[in-house]
Amino acid sequence: MGGFITSNQTDAIAASWDRCARRYNLRHDTGRPIMRLQSSEVAPRLEKIVESTGGRQGFFQHLASVAGEIGHCLVVTDADGVSVRIEHSGATSGSDGWNGIALGSCWDERLAGTNGVSMALRTGHAVTVRGADHYFSMLRQFACTGIPVLDAHGEMIGAINLVSVDRGNRADYLFSQQLLARTAHRIQRNLFETEFRDAMLVTVSRGGRDHVLSDDALVAVNEAGMIIGATSTVSACLDGANAASLTGQAFEAVFNLDSNQLVNVPERVLSMPGNPGAAVNLTAALPKAATPRQVAEPLPSSPVRKHRLPPSLQQLATGSHSMAAACRRAREVLKNTAMLHLEGETGTGKSALVAALLQTDTPDAQIIDLDCATLGDRDADKDHLRMVIEQARVHSVLPNVERFGAALIFDNVDELPKSSQAELRRFLKELEKNSHNQGGYGRDGNLIIVSTSRKPLIDAVNAGHFRDDLFYLLTGGKVVLPPLRAREHPEVLAQALCAQLTGRTVTFSAEAKDALRRLAFYGNVREMRAVLQNALAAAQGNQINLFDLQQTAVAAPPSSAMIAPSCVTGPGNLMPVYDERSMILEALSSSRWNVSEAARVLGMGRATINRKLKLYEIKRPI
Image 1: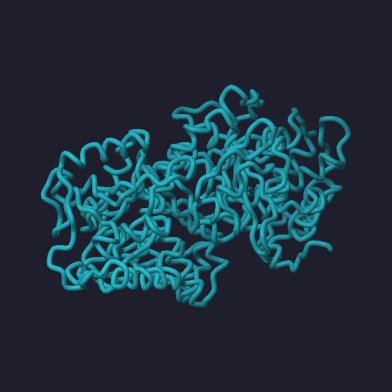
Image 2 (image 1 turned 180 degrees about the vertical axis):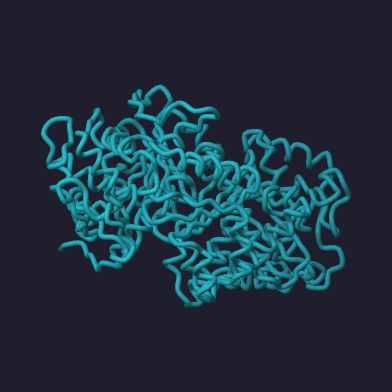
């Protein structure tokens, strides 16, 4: 669902007008066309809605508060289109209504003409009926967006609708459709998880850049590997599929993957080839009784310090007080301001730090990651940025959030095209304004903003490539990650990485430790990991010596003028002659060209490795 008025919606509205005129003989100028039921008739309908949604009124309450803040009216109807709950700013469902919209109003097309409730219930999709699209002239001052609410089996329970005075603004329609779609999906997902709690639940989502614009879906699989249910959003993840068509099919026949493979790696994301140009990500959650027990060996950590960091941040800071200080400051900045800018050379751990911070302090936040280096000056790229921002805004106001509902991450923000910088600046200015006013999004709207850059962002400003006003908006909470060559004990980190790679304790000879301290590692932790992988392959037993390191390669520095003599040569004349392209090819070959697995081995994100594949013109062999 793209969030705009599509040709299909236009055709459906035109067909509704034709029915209203020809079949129901309705007149456009009818004075009071909306029939109302008595409150005694509404009460049992509301009780049925509450029972059907599992008693989760919190969804509607939160949605109502958001609607009130933006000047909209929330209307909840049953499957017959009768309004059983109406809430808006300064009023509850017990009020006399909002601009003539009241409890008990019947929005059936045969009585109320063309409207958002009837269109949503009839089409089964989110529909926006703009002012001029209403059949009755008295309703043409309003825009109404509706979406059906479905139970675990896809049966229609009712509809949720947002009504506002129509300003003719497409952004209003987009926001309403996205917000209602996410809420309806959350309701069905909760019902689905309860209904199929004894089955393996597989989360299905689209891969690639468009995945942030579509819902994920749940598929329930029994012990025999058969699909026994799916949420309605599965059609957005698997083109041409729907919940009814999947039910009763073998999981392997649909996804080309034995469900037992998911049982062996629960909660791990597996990426499967999908339609041309797309991929499907699968994550399994097993019934509690069936979840295998997992035992993880603790990694070597830094010496005990006061105010210890959480374990995930301790691992990133292994062997370096300066890195620990940067992690600690980044955590404080994010806690206090909900906005963080990270600078650091490639491989210093920016993405890993962001992931660790979010997992530690906001584990339920929806993460929306945009690599700015993939955007160009095309209108489509600018539209994509707007859609990503709008998606984050929607997630930040969804029901059932604790402190933060969404984390919007701009990787490589220094490479954001100038044509898109103005759009991001407008968004951040609005966020800043609403944060100061104690409302809207920002901290009070449950939205985190994180940006990263490999080079100092001020350099891009000085070069005229980056707006100075956007620079100041982004860098109020800036943290710089130290390069590996500036950290105190790289040999301690090397030992921890070896334990991570092999699952056992690996030691270093004195000469090898000295070499590790001397090497520049311009690729930082990512490069060190690759160096150690090669050294481990050459090593005999559980010790790495100088000869093993000499068999490997070390990344060439950015320019010879920057190389200090102590960094160029170490014991035994260890020279930096590393080739990143070869490293990537080796990782892809060893993982049988599974890009996700190669990215994990290299310590890169998927976006980073895909960008480097394009940079080095690496193509999968036929």
